[in-house]
Length: 154
Image 1 (cartoon, helix red, strand yellow):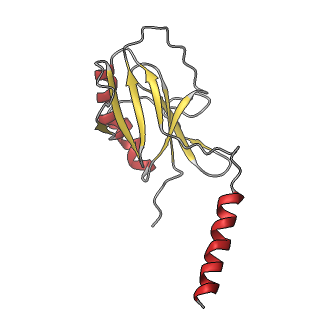
Image 2 (cartoon, rainbow, N blue to C red):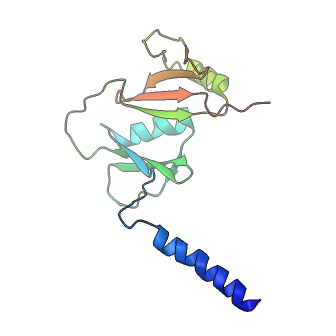
Image 3 (cartoon, rainbow, N blue to C red):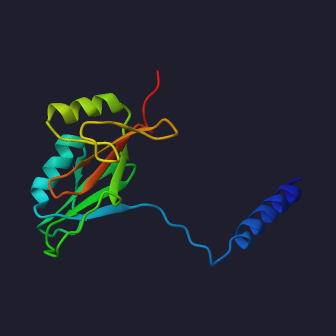
């Protein structure tokens, strides 16, 4: 019986070792970096509007702030580069929320203008799949999408 178990383990591990193609790689999302005018102002915006937590900036460079997007994902705000920032709505940070209506109420209470995809102010976009989304800009003009993909259901 021990020989059968050992043989089964060997066969299983043999397939695992040789079944992986060495030319295949795996990538996962790690962080999103934004070039900003003022890292402190931008960090306060993301912390107060989106409730992001600040995390340790392991670069230890002034002018860089790191925020957590959850699940080990990060947002890096970098104000040390002085290149011109070109922005358009198609390039945006998309986040989902567990309570879309509450987030809309927060934007309204903070007097942050939002719009649907075509740009109609204070309108909510509803995609063909029923997902709600709005777009607004951070202090540097970057577009942020908030959608209801993560909407909690009762």
